[in-house]
Image (cartoon, rainbow, N blue to C red; front, side, top):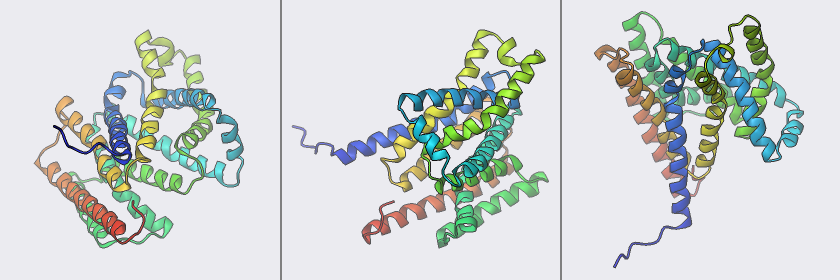
Length: 309
């Protein structure tokens, strides 16, 4: 007879959170496959992503009856200005990554999302006055060593990875201090970018160069899918993160760049020689230090009666 204990509600919540978060990270990790499949210049693909994301989110939030509440929240002091800043950073992040995939630099893009957690910690110190723990200092110094190694070997900063990490890390810091939830905040950011994106697509259409206008049905459908592909992973992640401690969420987030790295090396055969491996190894070591320190700190907080993060 099976005498194993029945799962508790907490166990079920944790398992659900892991599944939802993993699906979100796997979708994000597979984004290069989608971007490679769409035959449109990076700026045009970005504009389509903004337009279709706005329309998709409007349907989702409208069905939930939250558009009115979002409109009222947007009138609060500072919310609109913060959303303009965060929207600009998100647009920059999206464009750089789309460009990197189009240029055959998926491996460089994965570097950005590997080091984003450490950049986020550094941004928190510089802008929010957060204190660095010893393990975090060691992790940042180790990662900086990896970036320095790559710079010295290739004669230039790994700017794609740094641009992605810097833009997304700063975006995360703005959203952390913002008043809107994940979907509401993304909707407002898309609404603010929508006029520029739509104007650009209409300008291309007037010149007969709009991919949606001249491409086949398959390509048009792929462009339309950029809306749900932007919003669905975020929705899954938000639902999963609410059910998990932040230390576990921090570990799961490396699924996306790991998948991107594997796709770049094994599917598209981008260069990843021993020299580059040394730089990445230092960054991976930094992430191990950061993750172990985060888990240890979370356990110490729980044992001492602090917040279980």
